Image: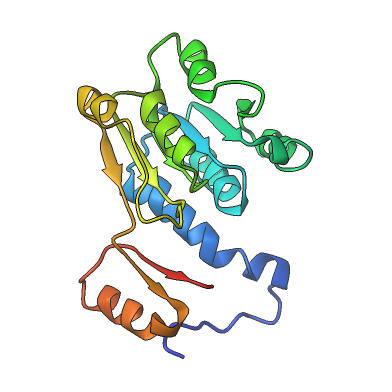
Length: 193
C-alpha cells in the first residue's frame, strides 16, 4: 500500500489512469534524457507511452518532434500523434523513418531519440537517426533475451543510451520496489505474463 496513491474524488478516472505512464514519459524525456528547449526529438512507437512522450517533449520545448509508428498505427495512433503536435508523423510500413528524419534535418539527425516501441528495428532506427553526440532514452521492452543493435553506428556517433536497469515478474513486485528504494537500480520494470 506504500506505493499506491489515493485519487481525489474530483479527478476523473480517465485522467488518473494516465498519471503513472505520464510520469515515466516526463521523467525519461525531460529529466533523465535532459531535453533542452530547442532540441529535436524522434519518438519511435505510437502507443500510450510514445504519445505521452510526445506531449512531454512538446512541453519541454522541443523544436521539432518526429514520431514513427507501424502500419497498424495508421488509422488511429498516427493521426493522434499529429493532433498532439508531432511535426512529422512517419509510417514505418510505408517509408524508412531514418531516411525521413535525416531528410527533414538536412542530414544532421535528432538530438534525442525516445524508443517506446520495444521493436528491435525501432531501436536500430533510433540509433541511426541520432546526430553525433545524441542521446537515446530506451522505454520499450522487447521481451527478448537479446536484440541486435548497430553498435558501430552508436560508437561512431558517441551516443548516450539509457536503459531500464532491472525487470521482475509481477510476483516479485516487492523486490523491484525494494531495489529502487535502496537505490540498487535506476529504473525497474514489472512484467505481466
